[in-house]
Structure formats: C-alpha cells, structure tokens
Image (cartoon, rainbow, N blue to C red; front, side):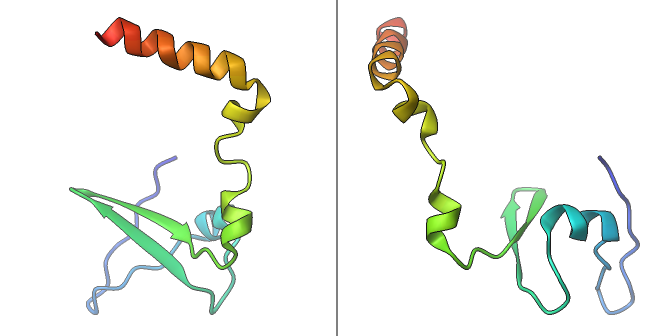
Length: 79
C-alpha cells in the first residue's frame, strides 16, 4: 500500500485514517518513527513490553529440535 501526503508549511503531515486504523492508534497516543537511511517506519508506541515480546521466536519453540537442526545445516552450508 502506498499513500501520498503533502508536507505542510510547518513541516507537518496528517497520518491517513487508513494508516491510523491499521496501527490502531487514537488521538493523543504516541507513535514512534524508525529512520533507516532514506526510509521511515511508523509504529505504535510500545507500552507493554510483554505483549510486544509475546510470540517472538515462536518458530524456535514449536519444534526446538527441528530449529536447531536447520540452524546447524545453515551454518554448515556457509562454511
């Protein structure tokens, strides 16, 4: 999805409603900007680290033995 907006004379831009809905942000909530070279990622501010971290690495815990085997195979391919 690509959405274009015009920068105002005060260097401000309105976040489109579709993007606000996707991020589930409401008026007054904080958002963060992640700047990487010539790109910017906009995310909802993380208030609850536990919620943010839940699910990370789930591919490891679904089948740890398979994950370890695949990782070792990748290492061997690189050597």
